[in-house]
Amino acid sequence: MEQSGTPGGTRPTATPVTVAVDAMGGDNDPQAAVRGALEAALKDGIRVLLVGDRERLQALSEEWRRALPDNATRAADVLRSHVEIVPAGSVIGMDEHPAQAVRSKKDASVVVATRLVAEGRAQAAVSAGNSGATLAAALLTVGRIRGVARPAIGATFPTPTTSTFLLDIGGNVDCKPLWLLQFGVMGSIYARLMMGVDDPRVGLLSNGEEAEKGSELVQEAHRLLSSARLRFVGNVEGRDVFNGSCDVVVTDGFTGNVVLKTAEGVAELLFGVISREARGSLTGKVGGALLKPKLRPLRDRVDYRKSGGALLLGVAGEVVIAHGRSDAEAIGNAVRVAALAARQRVSSRIAAALASPDRAATVASVDHPDEDGS
Image (cartoon, rainbow, N blue to C red; front, top):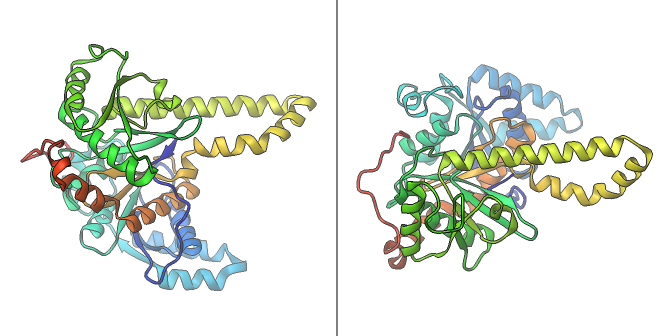
């Protein structure tokens, strides 16, 4: 599925945006993170801080430079002017408990990457590692926006004409009704700023459209959202994520992640079947060739590699969570999403919107929320 933000549109500037990249996170070898980040530096003028094992990242950077013989001089210049390696002593694995790992591994690559944002050395951070650990690290180092109880991760799903923004997709497995209310507020603001929707329609994901449907969490969240200063359209079902009936869909991170991974699996299945059928006969090959220009844009809309990463909403800085399976292309686009978010000052604009009098009446502040990812 499409992640929040669009990787296109970034351009080199006199003062390039600096993005810290957790080069050790994710399912793939750090080579994918290094290649993707350095390609973004080469093509888009983004300054990159590669965070991880210094010797290994240095070797991979040189390997990348040598693999570009036709542009070796330019690549060498980029390595000198736009790339810096920041050492990190450990890595948080996908199977580790996020909050515990962040507390015990202060020198982990994802913690160092988000700390660089907090210190002002980078304007954004990217990680394809443990998403819960990225959330916990962001809370520990960057902090949350005032009035936000829990940050959320959002992704955009294609509809026939536009997109639907779904949050949370994995940051908060267990949620409270208040958190879902705040997800709706942040999602509405995001849709205005990043998707250009003047008056976003907000729906609550449930197993039926009726107000009395859903779990206790959903029913209480429905009550809160109905009283909020939002264009709340009520409960929506899974099919509504894709039919354009609303602009923002709110759910807990467990359900949202299941929706995301299911949608990715269905998309891979459908395009795989179409590809096999097209190669199975002469008429299929001819029809496939004719349809390919039409199908490619649709495939790109549901390909996480093309869209990059998901912006973490609710923290006081730009933090992008990339797919755990990200290859070099996906990491490069995640870096571009992070740079675009930094240029557009997404987190500060959300903070300003939440601080306005009309929003302050909508968002119920929590005086002492958990800030360790638990």
